Length: 221
Picture 1 (spheres, helix red, strand yellow):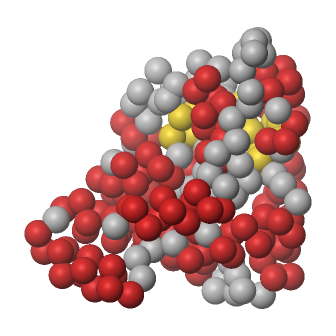
Picture 2 (tube, helix red, strand yellow; picture 1 turned 135 degrees about the vertical axis):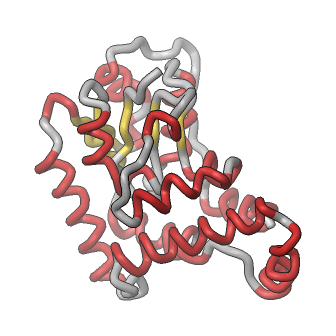
Picture 3 (cartoon, rainbow, N blue to C red; picture 1 turned 90 degrees about the horizontal axis):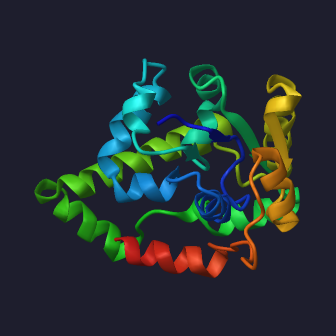
């Protein structure tokens, strides 16, 4: 099994909804940040990618046909080369709403207060917790330090990086392999791009709004 769809869009562009939609369309399973949090031992693959080391993508994606969200979007160009028949899905949304959503959700992800202390005290006894800590450290370094140069709270700068990424993907991905897509467009453009039928009488999934994300984050630790 090989990856058939590569998501190149930032988090908070409807990626969890897209994951559910792709799986409904038969591209199962779809790798997403939630998969990494469910299988935190995968972090070793992503740490290698972050450090520029070779990655055994086929081992990481065994059983998967698609990938969206962080960490995968950061490596869309490598994945395009490794999976030359895969199509690239660039999920976008209004830049201002993307920024506000990101600021209130993934930018603040991670344990806080007494939960952070409880997690620290449990680390010596839990390999899973140690892997989760590695994931959050990696995400902080990859996204907020490297990609946004520790200036995400400067809204014009952050939106500039968001738009720059979109233009980079458009420039690097051949038009015949690329769909620039917003989840509000629903099934039709996605299904047309992937060459599959629109599911009859099946509403397009809309998952992981801000309130849902915040509640899920609380339950993770």
